[in-house]
Picture 1 (cartoon, rainbow over the protein chains, first blue to last red):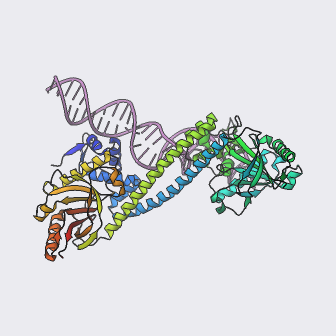
Picture 2: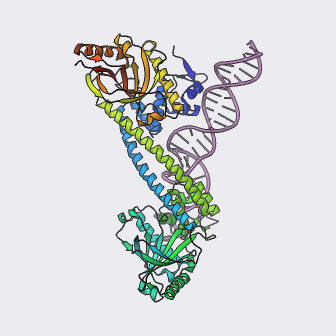
Picture 3: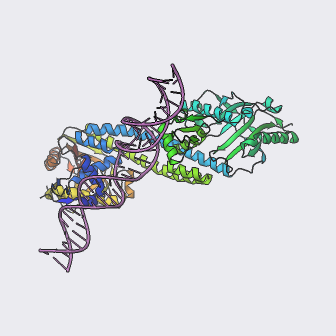
Length: 280
Length: 280
DNA sequence: CGAAAACTCTCATGTAACATGAGAGTTTTA
DNA sequence: TAAAACTCTCATGTTACATGAGAGTTTTCG
């Protein structure tokens, strides 16, 4: 009296593939009502649709086939609830992760955009820059002398120190270094601090937090790490020429750090900054 | 002069597993600076850390290794941006899906909770029920006569009709059926409509929308489909006894539909409802 | 009734990004 | 020089299927 249908019809009736039905059979999630012992053909009862619906619904809720299997075996509503509550927590977690990912992607796109719209290397400007919060570490070695490897190493330490505290990732934030005003004034290139420019999340991660004052900055843009000193000197000269007085530490800001491309193209982008004040 | 480190140190220094480094080598994402041709041992330059960082950062942004590979091959920032924008869209999509999943899980948990707190089968109550929006289809056959299979078939049609329009899934909503007031009054069990109780999303999906008035309902709870008619009659009798007059169509609401468990336990939960008015 | 068409079977493989382990060879340390 | 520590390749497992090969079965049509 109950009419049985072969796998193809069952699949079509439920918008499932045949392969899926076979898998469910094999896993014991949904055994066909009758299997021909000779041919091995599977025949389903239409009423099994409801069980299939249940499986698919649980899948839509994000449960794994293994979870569903145990639910169907135990036939216990409490178990469903447990699994769902567990799933709910997972979903919350995933939502957080996705949002963080989204922010990071946005930030990176912004940074690429900024790079794209950056002025030609060597351009000097006078800009007002808002207050910035930074997370810094002191420089143990002076990489202006010790070379780029020392710089990398310092960054590396900052990085791993932060990673231990669960800080997302460094690449998405712009990096900076500074030279103390007195040193810079007297032409000594002595790295003082290395830091990252942060956003609102920053304060959770360390006590080495500082603030860079807002104000006017004389800036020069460049795209090659090796030109920093010469550009910095040019910028200093420029300030002297126009009568701008130094008003704080010198800053080198690494606006984008796509330095994985072996510098074949102009992929790095720096902005050197000298805070200035004007004689009134 | 550049000191090379074996794979173990490289892995430890970057909090990556050895297997990962080997995979990246194999895929060409990060080739060790030197590979011993005899032993096959991989030796990395510390500077390769930056490339590894880049890879891991791109991974954190959700890009696939294949994407990263093409980015690293082309060495083109524009390509990064393209991939990121694409990724951003994917993230939006995923966020939508996750939120929908979350809603569905919550709804299901609620429904299980409700089931758990439901009164004993046979309990009669008088309740105020708020206005409800339903999405209905007319019943072509009277399943009170034709049997549960006909009911299932009707549901099936409703289901597949909705699925074509992209409606999420049925299991997460409670189902209902109704009998016209005149039929019910005269003791004729003739199914009139089958419907789902919906939420705010409902209106997007069909024109077969109707509203069930708010008001007082005489209700009886039960956990077995087969008892519907007898319980409905009891409820009707109850109304007569207390002098409540029928004020609309009879409704059978299937509050939870975990009928995959072969009814071994009390997993189904119905609430029959008769809208009533009082003589003043 | 027989042939062709349509259907179904099992088994193998691929997907993404690794994790894990076996068995053999290499380097470092004591 | 032997043991300990490290590394190699290759195979397999993970998830929920999709895809395809080659062989067998059922249905349909003339």
